[in-house]
Image 1: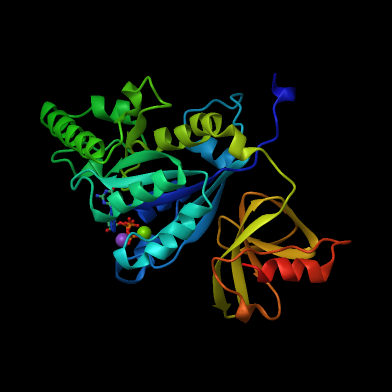
Image 2 (image 1 turned 90 degrees about the vertical axis):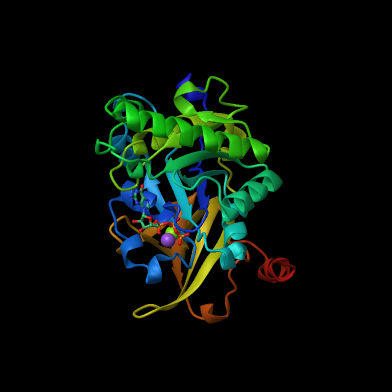
Length: 320
Ligand code: GTP
Ligand code: NA
Ligand code: MG
């Protein structure tokens, strides 16, 4: 019964994978942005958080308006795939509930894919595989934003057979790394066998399927992790120099609510900033305040509420 269901917070989803597998491009495809096209050398060099409200996700899937989405949205964290950024990858992973591992179908598992799998296993995080760049299969017929099964049906026999053997190769490589995987549309043991979703970040095939799995299926298997909790859990992602605001910190609010008093600013889909009186987890938040130049990425943000003992809170923060 809907009324009995516990309130869930937005899941935090980390995007991991080898350099150039298409992590940022996939996010661009979902958001309708072009972050990837503006990156220096086409390489992601930071972790960034994007909030996708449930309603925006619904628009990209075949979900009917009356179908409930149990979570308010999804906070997606993009990570760099370049080998020198392993610290950022583990920071992103340490705060996530679920992950998407992006694999280039033309290349299969690569060095940082394997590194990511190792991290996921250590943290016991469930994940989905986005088997990306299916449009690179020779002779692929573009079916913009189509569900993948539909798109595959429209392909020639040659494309279908290239797809089959490349998929089989990737499944074997996962097996060699200790993971059972299967294309999600054939996977009837979704709790034990990792789902593979073929995608194209270029033309959007499979993207509706990926979003659907993230909002409809994953919350079910990690419901306990998503139980909304009033205790604030907040991690500093980055400390930045902003041309108008001075030093700001980007934080991820993992749990709890930041309220006015606490004045905060959140980044909207358009990239503009909006003042909010209250922000509920999980969300990416930009904080403007004096003294932030000394903040350290990776540490916790402690919020002092009225009535809290300031000295005690400071002591707790310094223990890290
Ligand atoms: P790092 O963040 O640097 O690790 O890379 P990334 O995984 O974010 O990959 P990125 O989004 O930068 O994409 C790498 C290159 O592959 C870019 O030139 C993209 O345009 C291209 N690309 C990504 N996804 C696809 C896809 O699905 N199809 C095609 N044809 N090209 C893609
Ligand atoms: Na790249
Ligand atoms: Mg990237």
